[in-house]
Structures are given as C-alpha cells and as structure tokens.
Length: 212
Image (cartoon, rainbow, N blue to C red; front, side, top):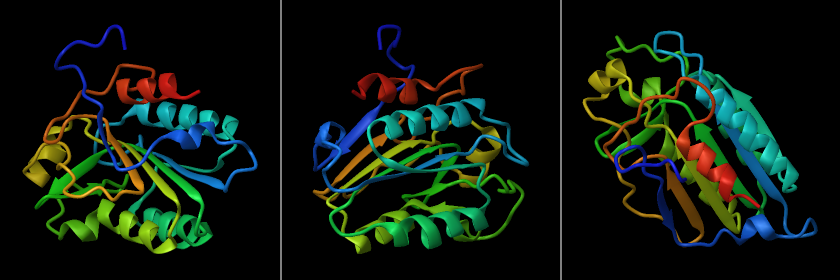
C-alpha cells in the first residue's frame, strides 16, 4: 500500500498453506465463504468500515466463484446460529473454506473472541458468555475437514471501553496455525488501530488489492 507508514497498520500473515485457492478453476472443489461485518454496536461506537469491508469482500469472493454467506451486525445468539447451525454444517470434506470478519475483537487469557453487537461493556459475565470464541470457530472448522481454511480477521479497532473490559489491547498472537490454515490479522498482536472516517480499513483494502 503506497501510503502506508510505519505504525499505521500491520497485516500479520500466518500460514501453513498457500493462497492458490484464488486461482482455482470453477470446476475445482467447492469454495465456501462466511463474511461478517459487525459495525452497528448497541453500546460501543460504530465501525462504518466493517460493513463497507464485508460488502466489498463478499462481492470479490463471488466473482471468484465462492458460495458466500454474508451477514451483518450479529448478536451473540446470531453468531451461534450462523456459525454453529448454518455455515459449519454446510461444509464438506475437501471444500475450501474462507472466513472474513470485520468488527470488534478482544482477547482474554491469550484467547481471541469476536465481539457481538449486543456486547455490554458493563457486563461482569465470563467472556464466553458475552463473546464468540475464535477457537470455537476453528474447532468446528477442523471437524469438517476442509482441504484449506483461510481466516481473515480485521478485529483490532480502537475502543477504550472494550480495552478496559478485556484489560488487553487488540488480539493475542495465535499459538498454533495448522498446516491447512492461512490466518491473516489486521494488526500485530496486542495493538489496535483507529477506524477510518470513511471507506475501507487498510487491512481490507490490502486484501482487495491482493485478490486477482
């Protein structure tokens, strides 16, 4: 990205696999994507770039012959319904699977979580009671045995209330990335970036630039 300066953003890429999936012909194994944009939070500041980013990514993936499940502004109940009961059961062994998420994320005790739009920063509940665990998504994906898993996570937006609740900034560094997984985070671990005034986040802009 020509205008990117040190400290602005860091796209962190962890991989045991390759991104050749984007060049696969239409007759290749099924390519399925879940695209989530969480931008309109009830008790946290809005992230307009999350919806814009998810919409742009979904359109780009459809042009690459992905079957796209596109969702916006998920509550915790919605996360469980969409991931656990809809997207995961539809995956078959041999599929190529991509998950894109833009919205708030948090870490607790080294584990990362997606923050639903109904998250209450005054909540005293356990983290698993108020947010959706990234590890839960990974576990469910592993059980379906897709050939390749691509996880694109833009979740380290600055928010003082969220940082105070989690007592940590941004997302934790992943401990293990399996050989069949590509994981890209929007920032370095334990860092956060401000949301843009308009348009796309730098992470998503970089992804769109990289797609064929």
